[in-house]
Image 1: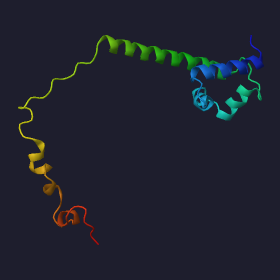
Image 2 (image 1 turned 90 degrees about the horizontal axis):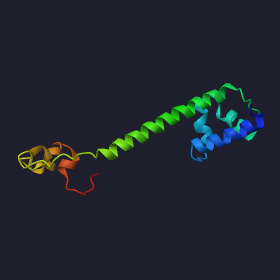
Image 3 (image 1 turned 135 degrees about the vertical axis):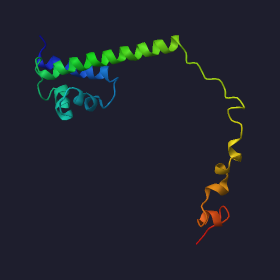
Image 4 (image 1 turned 60 degrees about the vertical axis):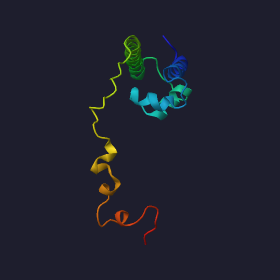
Length: 129
């Protein structure tokens, strides 16, 4: 059975490993094990003792097992993607786009401006008071 001081060291090491040395690992871990970030910081510093049978450690183990399962699923996804590279669709033919879009009346700049609007009545880059 671990001593309380050893528990703080295990907590620090676990946070470092799980969150890849992120400076905010306490803030990221606290919601996962349902404790306040300040409490977690006090535990990891040793300022407040963390007993080896504390329920937060069971939550921490469950969190680690969830993360391990997620990482295994992510690795399996990457493996399957590398085995079956995505097939790109063929380029659309000329029949697919028979008319260039810029020649369509809706795409013309004059068709987009509303009559009566200042942008329709003035030249580009001209200041209107």
